Image (cartoon, rainbow, N blue to C red):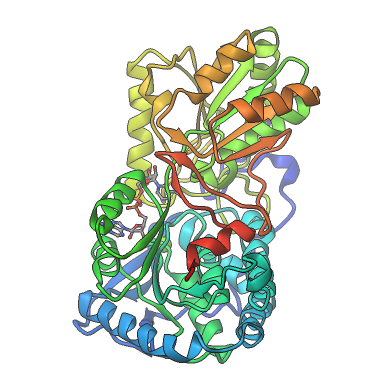
Length: 488
Ligand code: NAI
Ligand code: MG
């Protein structure tokens, strides 16, 4: 395949037919303040940090750094707002949530462009997946707001109070929606913190939330890094913490909340097994493998990062996979043809590169397509490792990048044992044309989400969450309401 030598944008020549998404009419401020008690206000200590565009490492904007004093102001605003918000009828609460959903739809393009600029993901994904799913999540939980008595029959569900929500950088707006929508539908008030590398769509969401007319203090959005997150976790007036992020921080939060009144849900890392049987539709399975590991540069907690292929079809699957990888387009996240965008931060790129070194040192055989990576910014070629085994660190540990390990198997029992041999239990995928085998596997695999003949499919109606070190609690669907209510 011919390759474009232009470093700024790597492309296979036959798809070069569209210009990058324009940033005209996209409003990005130079400086963003905190959203507390229905107002945008400066942080008390006056500190700001930079958010960068990971495809160039150029600064996009300054973002306020909330200290514990700011977090306290946000919690007090939420506590005060709870008094009346929790007494509104579900129908009234639902109206505001519907309004937020509609406003996201109206501004979808703006959200998609900012998401890709600030976080590095391909615009096609922000446009077709992240933003529509975020709107859907608000629509879906708006619908539940006046039906809680049906969700929990005869149990008289009540809101908890002020909830603290801390989200990661891989699906910034979508994770904000996953957290806010069920919390508001059930009558709680919120202090939410986006991740420090990707605050901009949460701040845009704050503008929309403001526009929705929701009473002041119901939603507060504070920005900052780990210390800001810890101030939320440790605040005595917070009744529940919902966290998505690394297993290490999850463990820290679990310790910090142990023995307190605080309820907790954790959605942590993963090392999903993607299992291809010899009777699978091979071409579809190959597409599924690509989507499972290269979607969002592999910055996906439920990524299918461990591939298991039945021995009889291993050669053909690996050949087809390599051919398909040759066609992947890596480069400008704002280009509509891009398949793989920029790695979210320099720090994450270092983590991934370090794992690639570890894989090589441990004797893995690497394959990367021949591609010109752009010069500036954070980039990683899609990567496969074969000749690896269960004991290799790249098979055991979450890499959170576009790096796939491939192992083979002969029998069902063997692959079940290998797939479950991990501290994580978030996701798995099974590819077979045999329905009975599919159902058998879904019983045996220890994972919160199991996809059949597909991967990385999300829907607001469907619960999502992990087992083992991948965390506990569910988000999405009816299950997603439960962490936000208490019973008499
Ligand atoms: P992280 O867990 O540090 O960041 C997630 C969120 O937690 C961010 O908003 C961050 O500001 C906040 N945070 C950090 N320290 C905190 C603390 N002590 N108390 C409260 N909040 C805190 O994730 P990081 O360091 O950016 O990524 C490291 C690794 O974590 C990745 O390589 C990946 O393996 C994993 N990860 C998993 C995610 C998932 O969706 N399961 C998301 C992000 C990272
Ligand atoms: Mg950024």
